[in-house]
Image 1 (cartoon, rainbow, N blue to C red):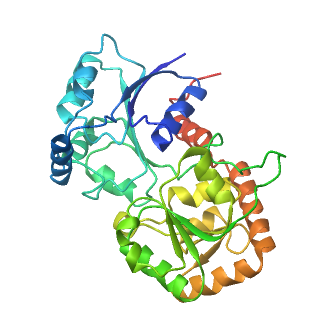
Image 2: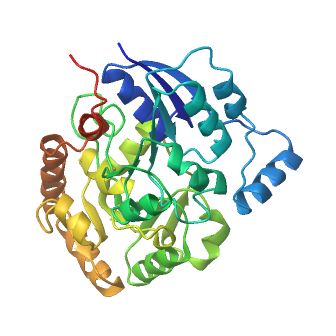
Amino acid sequence: MPKLLYVGDLASGTTSRMRCDTLRQLGFTTCELPTDVFQPSILLRYADKFARRLRVPIDHAGVNVALLALPEAPDLLWIDKGNTVLPSTLRRLRRRFPRLRIVGYSPDDMMQWHCSSIYFLLGLKYYDAFLTTKSFGVAELRRWGCPRVIFNENAYDPATHRPALDHHGLPIEQTIGVGFIGHHEMERCRSIARLCEAGVAVTVTGPGWYRYRRSLPANATVLPPVFGDEYAARISATIVNLGFLRKMNRDLQTQRTVEVPACGGFLLAERTAEQQQLFAEGMEADYFGDDDELIRKAKLYLAKPAAARRIGAAALERCRSGRYSYKERLSDALAELDLLPSG
């Protein structure tokens, strides 16, 4: 089997971990080089934050040293959001292992300062190919010197993103009316506040919300982040799952665009052509263009939970039949690059 060295955040529950496991399922013998390192020192955490703001993140994990010390080349070097991998490291690997194939991946908008680094941008010319979930990112990454860029849409992991069942094997009870899972952003906060002010209680789950709890009405419930089975269960237990785009990432679709339907959840998201193409409006998901439409449709589906469940079931079927899993998405991209293991 071909050997693959995976560089990325390999913490449990991360999508990078899911992609690493998927590549193993596709037939690679996988070695791992994690980039995630917990910094117990407050001083180091502040140094980290300052370095990221300057777009020169610190390689605490020693990834560059480990790459340069490789005794032999893998068949494929996979770099998941390689912000700490130095251009000089990639250049030296190229010289030492001329036949090495280097492929990069990121689910983020790598042109934005908060997602990227100078190292990443200057190193793009040393990649053989890069996979991006941003359609507009194809031309932009090429302009930075990447020879081949593939638009690889957002995906789900069947082992994680699946309908939650009770101990009888039946769908769990939907105890949440309207919910949102994701990071705090001011625009999202304002829309959720409007929804609450219209009499619709909202359960918000994710990082950053406690700090702004006072800006939300009393009928908003703020909960800490959830991962893995808890994440899937929270979606399954919610009648209306909200989907907000991250404006600072120029989102046209998000990971939750696919993850919510993969859990059998009903998705009510901001309307974009890409999301409408993934899930048909009114049949496999529903969409809104402004807060007034959001309020109207949230109330509609709360009054008709059976309709929301039918749409969620149709979206789950689209996930399964439409090649939306990581295994299928990555398999298609690797086949296009002639890197998919045979057999």
